[in-house]
Length: 278
Length: 306
Image 1 (cartoon, chains in turn purple, orange):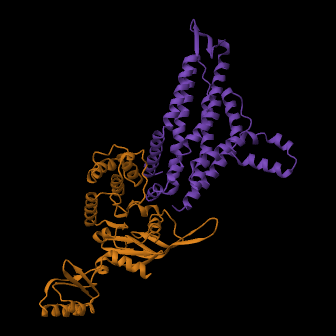
Image 2 (cartoon, helix red, strand yellow):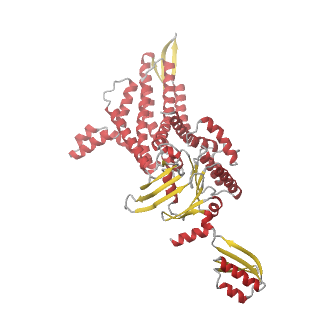
Image 3 (cartoon, one colour):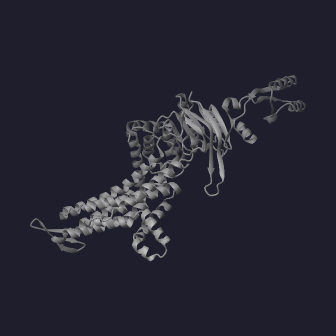
């Protein structure tokens, strides 16, 4: 990548951050993350006797030191679950406007009149949007991990990996926002479709049960196709949980198949953008 | 010689996705704009001017034909590097300040940080926005937005300026400032392509003009030639009624003005004969002058003839 190309990408990322700041998206997430961090700082109490951890108190429950590992993993799991569900909904909702806003008449023409490839504009915006969320996710997860580690001496890296997986799922859902943004220039439709994918995922994750319940082979094929084609948000949530509690990951298919979905949808978005008239 | 803008048989057809109905917005426009010239593009609403400009900038893809900027295929991003563009209904992000907006578009135009930092205060000062650089665009008046938009188009010192209604919303003093700025750029050899509804502005500023109607070039030429030599005006006082009637028969138009009578003749011979007749009747001649058409008259005539 040439320095000029990098400079253009940096400008597009900066612009996304500026818009996120002005819409209070960044500060909203930062405030929520900081509140959660402060919450954990104050609720987690450690009693140290003769240089060793004696008891750990969390949410008013005091446990002996031998259960520290379990308590930390449970707390990490709760945060990871919060990030994966409520955090993800919030992230999609907040950033759904950042992509379609680029296509507003009077703004897009000016961007396209610059000596920049169309795909570069969209990729720059996508990276910017992803970084806005990534910074907040990593800030929250890393700080909580640090607080727990320093207070309890338990350093479980699975929690850090789970944040990367959460961001991976957001990156895939953001490709849907990009495609809808290019096709319909609507933040509302982009949000609705993305939420729809998130909500349908737990249903499709019950594929074995559905296959047993459905009587027609056509219906079963539809369920199978939808399951394999659409991003497996629910299954990825399970993998996230396994990472946090230290369980082995049995099936990597949800990761690579969801990645393929993201690549195809993003590629379609780039293609549609390159062909559109403004 | 490579032209600043050169199009050949440029066509744009919009198809409705559902009904399949076609609209030929641009219907085979071939146009050449010389380097260093000031070119005005005119046409009634819906004539295809904006679509034509958008194809030059690759915002819209031509259905057929080709467009080149300084000899380079307009579809190539590098072809847009020498272009500074100010769209008509621009919507600059209101979260930006004047300074950050210029910095952003300057970076997209390929300027490095040092060049941008040097250029921004210069331009803001030139366009009378020196004290407004750190103020959000949401607080700018329409005229100020137009000026900062022009600054954006000038950021990377372009060789071709494409301006869509550049003085829209700007007060008369601001208009004069913008015109002077553009005249300065013209002297530096910058090609200026003006898309404006203000015919007087185009007439005042542009050397060449094209009138587009229904997606085609209806008239093209030098402003001076298009507006020159339409007749001769003779104004005299105390013209007897009998002589008025006699001259009216040969005149193209007659008008009463502050007690004087003004005749417009199509030919020089008719004007000379009229002067002889008026002098023979001892009428005082107030004015004898060659008349010119305004660009507006030319425009209206062309549109009505089509």
